Length: 492
Image (cartoon, rainbow, N blue to C red; front, side, top):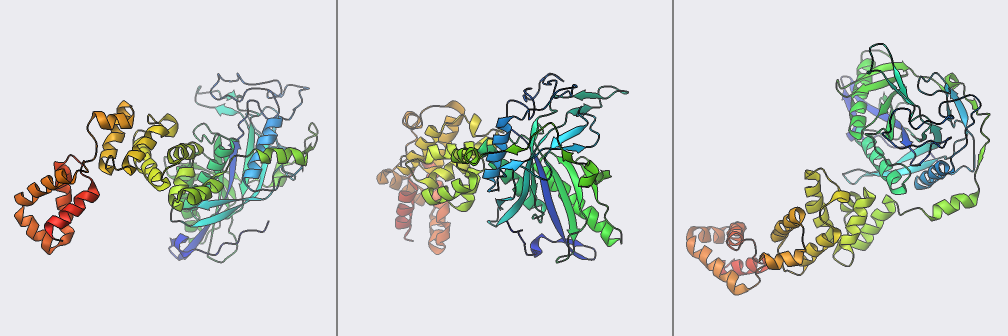
């Protein structure tokens, strides 16, 4: 796969004291594989157990214990590679990556170096302004996670929890194709969405199940790549954006003062809004990689890969294209709806057999707006797709107005019930009787002769009369009929 050469975008340049700078970003995403057991042992991967409760003799590196590969973790890595449109390597090998881990009992990490399970792929990322760009994926390899050191339980001792030790991680390495913090956030959001659609990682950043190492460098536009610094273990999309902004500014200030950037690993402190040095950046030779003698090369059959491919779900890009084609949605609305699989499924249940645009408008504006306000999502929505569909139908049939629909939705959201029954019981039907609407209009015109003169001189004031009539009818007047009657009565 050829590298993606991106032309310099003047809008994304950072202004320094001595001119413009371009930030160049590459990312290594560590995604915890969704599996019941660890990569090389049968110990549980469940989150939140008592310390050291999910630890086998293999995880504890007891003498004579040998790792055995978990087939499901391999399948999950292959599924992810297929979802990234990547090369699946039918032969891959595991290596030992050596350096001191206080919370990995073996004293080395089993990872993949020269021969990863997944090769080059790509992710198509959409920005809010409608722009799309491609991020190249360099590789995806499987490795085991480390445990967790705990330093705040004692003034003199550190404790180790090995529950996470040996859990399978996919490290997804991007090319340096990102050019702003906004692009980096959008890339992680899209990658997380793909993983969640595939069911290969739950993407829960609060639990550390998805975390990012962010490589940042700056250069003058058109110049070769600058020296990069790696910001380790950033665990929220918001923090990823902040860390990039802070680190790019730090590097620009050093370079403009005549200094040089040291290649190093840094940590981001969100409370202080700064990155700080952690250690000088190691190179591959510092890790003394060598093939793990306890593990044979991993050899996959092509039919195993094809079988996994045949059962992949419809992914966000394909779903977005279908929503645009089948439901007539705008690219923006389709992007919002396919961001999460649960959201897309909810929308489709509402839209089936009815006006897709009307369904999308109601789901995005009314339902999502109310759920966001309450800190909920569609999986915990008190309103079912069938109830939303009924409200959309009532609007389409002219039984209720858009304004009444909002009131009806609020009733269904807080109290429940069948929307059609509620409309009958609570007298929410739209008034389409032109005689009744004319009576309301006549009363308003008679009471406001000064406004009548003004609207005849300036027809844009018609909205005032519409508002008064709606108020007088309790929001039940048919808007189209009301407009027609007002225009006829006022002679505009």
